[in-house]
Image 1 (spheres, rainbow, N blue to C red):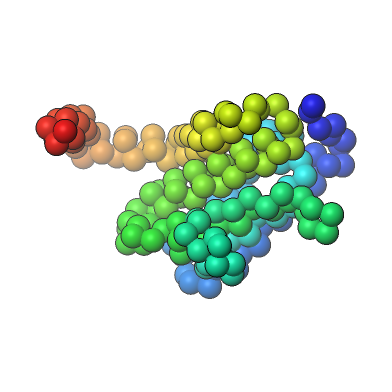
Image 2: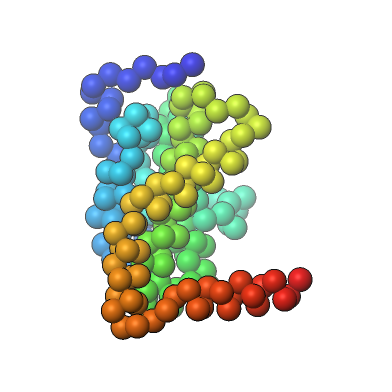
Amino acid sequence: MKQNINKAQASDPVRIINEYCKPLPINIEKFIRRLLEELPEEDLVGLDAIIIKDKFSYNIHNNASEIYRKKTKSEPARIEISLTTLLIGHVYKFCLIPLFGKYLIARSLFQEIGNHYIHCHNEVPKGEWKSFKVEYSKKYAKKSLFFSIYYINYFLKVINVDVSKYRSKNATKKNNEY
């Protein structure tokens, strides 16, 4: 059963709340707003806010990097992303190569928006929820970061770095490990 969308709901912007206290190499609010522009409006209907945090305050969610909170009688639907948990072990990569961090953030955000879509539209059978969220996040992360990835590949070609050599070495290395 698909949720009815009226014009007022579709045009309501999702709030982006930044509670992350450390400096980042990107403007996180602007970046998330740009990511949201890639999505169909109906996928965001009913989503009130995206909250960027250091860590989650609830012990039960300490290891999670993102959480989708369904709409309740007292609270609207929202997504919370813990950058500390998401970027653990990747902080230096994020600072040196912001595209890497952007990709991690985009994948996490789109996976939770996929979760929101599942709960609002009731079109995905329960047994397919996990695969739907993963495919949804891959699709929109690639779409939203396509030009950034294209420019990096172009730059590598300009400086004569053959990326395929590195890919084939890594593939061979992985195959030999098994």
